[in-house]
Amino acid sequence: MKFIHLTDTHIVAGAGDLYGTNPKTRLQQAVAHICAHHADADALVLTGDLTHLGQEDAYRQVCECLAPLPMPVYPILGNHDCRSVFIAHFKQVPRDGHGFIQYTQDFGDYLAIFLDTNKPGAHWGEFCELRAQWLRAQLAATDRPVLLFMHHPFFPVGIGSMDTIALRDTAPFLSAIAGYQNQIKHIFFGHIHRPIFGSINGMPFSTLRGTNHQVALTLDDDATADIIASHEPPQYAVVLLDEPQIVIHLEDFSDHNLRFALT
Image (cartoon, rainbow, N blue to C red; front, side, top):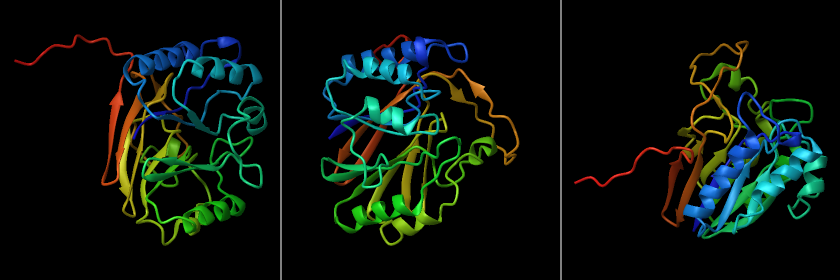
């Protein structure tokens, strides 16, 4: 199976600019590039912050941008999203029994589990006991390898200003996955606007740049520091799934450098 990972599109109402660039134009460029080069992908996952302010017209713009994609789209919420407005524009996206945007989907040999870490009015993430109970039930019900998709990481990445707005009170989440770490083959997240790869407790993880603006690489533990942004090239990821392996390629879709044969 092949799927696309896209994150942090930050569309604003009226298709306006944000931090000196235009999020709608950037998303349209990403979609056009995907359609031109990866139309054979089986799915596209969008790991949150679809909009910047949760505005209704912004979600309408997101849907317009995504419409040309030939593959199904699986979105989740980020801290900049509004759950109720999201639901109004993405009626087809499943919810759990408590109304959270949480659902599962077959991804080849893997079970993909999509999580909701949105806390209304806050930039940091929340994963409450109700959400954790749902996650543990999904893990308990399968013996297949699992992919987790979430917006907020549940661990520090070394950028203090972002670590302070990661998932808080991680106890419910950690309790939900306890005993299933070997089954969780990869964790995909957004929120950080940087390409980061690693593992935690034996579970591999990855994230990537957003489609509009990025967070600069400032490795420090100062949680009170401002978030320093940058205009590094936007990305999406191309993920190749097979039962024994997961391969992730990063595509800087706005890069127009000359390509040439090595002889």
